[in-house]
Length: 296
Image 1 (spheres, one colour):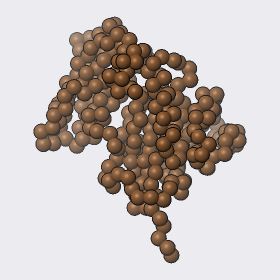
Image 2 (cartoon, rainbow, N blue to C red):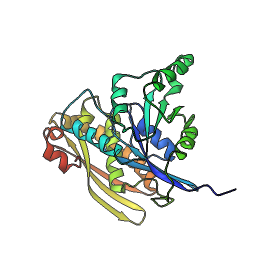
Image 3 (cartoon, rainbow, N blue to C red):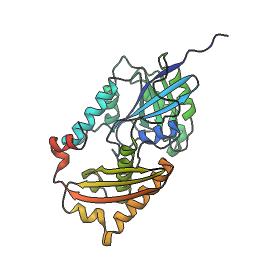
Image 4 (spheres, rainbow, N blue to C red):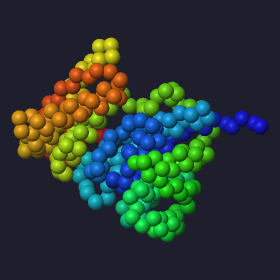
């Protein structure tokens, strides 16, 4: 028997907001590299998650949920990130929610160039109340594009995620690995620290506040296995600052505690974390501010 050729390539995970793209990437990689929350459009940056096996290296590209309902400079920048990512990958995974395919899903599907093989990942099958409705749904969506494969799965529980990996492995081009075998992301610890803090803001605050916040790492010092990290939380409105801080600093303390615990698990070492909050009025609608904070 001849030895199977080694394969490697980039796989974009795309879909409308809140279909579970980041949860799916974390599941496939086997470790949390992209932040998640129940709120839509938690992801703002292109993040690569890497899974290496003896015969294949998957480089998953998690993208922001493509926004068709709202404008604004930040959303335009995020949408540009999605379209830019799709131009440089080998395969795309279109994630949709089981039982739901809207015009928003169709709009994302149309962004994927026809030259790319596309795997349809039907997520959240564990939440589908009527399991008998899954097959008719698959048939309905299958007719909207020439998909390379259709894989119903649950990113939350892991059901059928191995089947998705097997499918993707056969679609990647023959080639050598692009990253070290033990590497799980191409992002720095500084970036991951900021993302973890931003995730806790999403989880701890109301519907409006997270979308007007940004997190930057001001200090990052390493002493052996210990890290001293200082993060600045930027809010777009003055009245959001006390909401982030909370009564007697309680909410900010909770955000810091939960973020520190996640960082210690991710970095495998002690973390001393300090957070500050400042107001930068309407930064998310200011192209200059967006560039300053890393959005284009």
